[in-house]
Image (tube, rainbow, N blue to C red; front, top):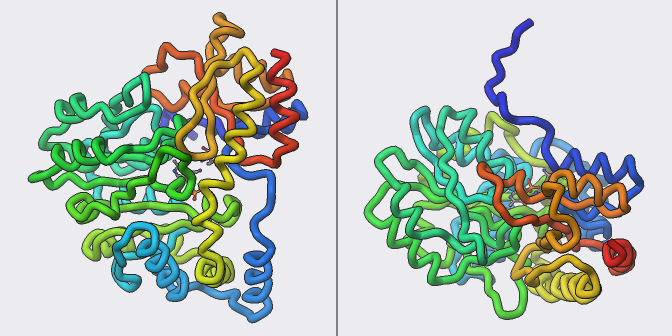
Length: 381
Ligand code: PMP
Ligand code: GLN
């Protein structure tokens, strides 16, 4: 039977492909972004507790009340604003679901959605499935900052949404207040919505600060702000995230969420709620926790032939391999590197128009000895 694909250009994601290749070749997997260490014991114990309590049926559609309260408290503590747990916070099955639901709730055929390359891979398929057109702008190539002039030129009557991501995957760049000022000025007086992907909100390093869109009322009033407990609690496998948005936007998002998944995994929601209340230090100390890993990895890699600027946020480090290999493109280089014993992500896959730079992305959310072993191999290359 002939299937007229709705996503003809979509294949298996680079994350799946590189993780599979790493397993096949027995390589150290610094490709797909996930920790090789476990989440806190206390968090696992709370999951066990709720499993034994019999909390094994549907959670409320919008999220367990205790978790929505805990998220409201975390937002207030970090950003000084208290969202309404009833009407403005929705728990979702990972940030992926929140992104898909937000886009599906508001994008219609003919609408344009602006993304900045290198862009996370889940935005464009969601726009396309809803009949929208993705408009790709490139982040400034020197520092991955927002290209405000091109954004000003790209905005038109069909622009429905702009998607930003800070701290940024894969570059690690962190948006500054000045960039957000520029964005705010460009969106003022329009009906354009903003999707702010802040899944790495708690991973930024000395000299940088995460400026959530939630701290800026003019932007927050038009925004879906998305985060993920996968990143914050080292639990990518639980697929638990959330969206904070004004009540009118949350209402629309929930209409999609209730038919996409209806609700998210119940015992985990209650466990995360307890853990966030009992151990706010966990997320408050996450910057220092990951900064030590970044510093270890980067100090070891200084002996290598890769060149790089230390990442400002996220648990990803970009490295330029042009001094090692000027022939292979980044996809070929990442495959070859996996055969040498370390898997990484080629960066061109996040672009519509592949960049001139020869960059690959390493994930340093790993045990110190994993990073040491990987760096030992990479320094011989
Ligand atoms: N956005 C970005 C930028 C990400 O890196 C990820 C992580 N995979 C997601 C969204 C999706 O998060 P989740 O695993 O919670 O669906
Ligand atoms: N966000 C993760 C990364 O960038 C991957 C998530 C996934 O595999 N879908 O590596």
